[in-house]
Image 1: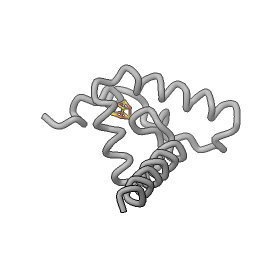
Image 2 (image 1 turned 90 degrees about the horizontal axis):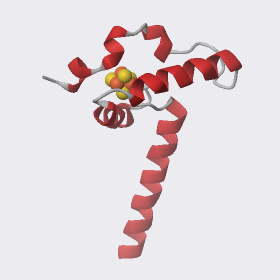
Image 3 (image 1 turned 60 degrees about the vertical axis):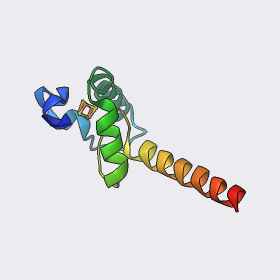
Image 4 (image 1 turned 180 degrees about the vertical axis):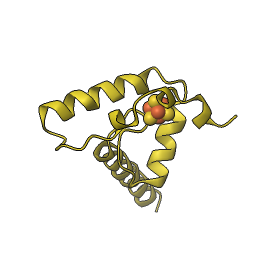
Length: 89
Ligand code: SF4
């Protein structure tokens, strides 16, 4: 069984994970928090997040993160990797 079959968002309204308003607006922030709360209860949150980071850019909440949060994670990982490479050289 793949991780997607264990995703608890299968029983949720998909629109919850794909907000349409600006991420800084009140209703969108509330919707984002609600989606993240679902993710925190999900048994495959880590697998989902790893997938979303790998395939980004992908819209919506995946693995308890927004697209912008995943972008920041990728940049941090790339920076650490670059620092490690430069230190080793
Ligand atoms: S972590 Fe969130 S988006 Fe990912 S499968 Fe679980 S509920 Fe769905």
